[in-house]
Amino acid sequence: MLFSNRQKKLILDVLLKERRRLFSRHKGELLDKTIEDLSQMLRNEEINAEPKDNVIDWSRKGGKRR
Image 1 (cartoon, rainbow, N blue to C red):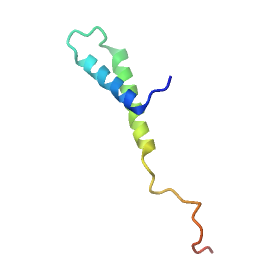
Image 2: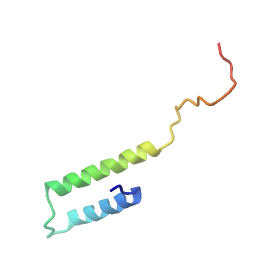
Image 3: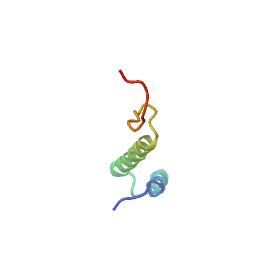
Image 4: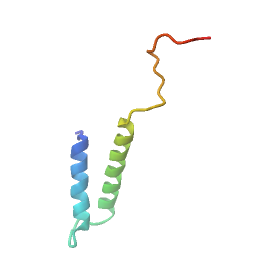
């Protein structure tokens, strides 16, 4: 099952709130690793979604060639 970017952000917010709860039985290494992995996935998606300035446009016609 694939999640949208908004769904991943919602899940991350819920996990972060759960980690801050005083008497949460879900605290621990697995929760921390899950939060870390989900945060990294979102950062990667943001980086990959940004337009690249240094991309060569091969479809351009014209210009001077040597």
